[in-house]
Image (cartoon, rainbow, N blue to C red):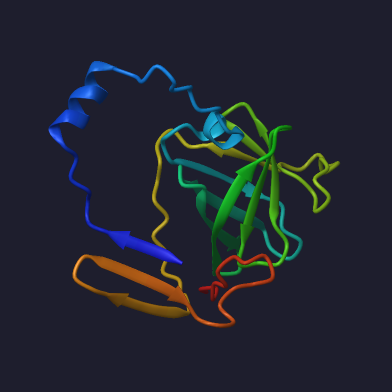
Length: 182
């Protein structure tokens, strides 16, 4: 379920404490998750052309957001067709990035530093090939703006908007089912 609300007002006292760097004696620094260590607090865009069995290549654009959501656009070169997937991403301790979306099988990548994502096979293993399976980080974040159709109900009260997915709008992974654009 998605929840939207107006910005929260913060008291002057809270702002002063944050700016001055005052911490409580019992406060411990939060452990950094693999996701936070990988992405930090800024969205990123990766892109590249991967091999395609029945087309000239598959141009991939992948936006990763700090809230662990992603948008992936796959353009089939020479076919005049594209698809968009939405979902959640995670990074394992071994550096493997998993994208879970409306498709049944997740996309798997190995992170190579912060600049490269290498596509893995369905078992999470390197693909033995001389073909390119790398997506490179683009210098600037580039928002993917393709339209997709999601199934559900949106309501709004005085201060809060709420989207509720309808039955049958998720797949077996619990991710939103996305109707692909062409």
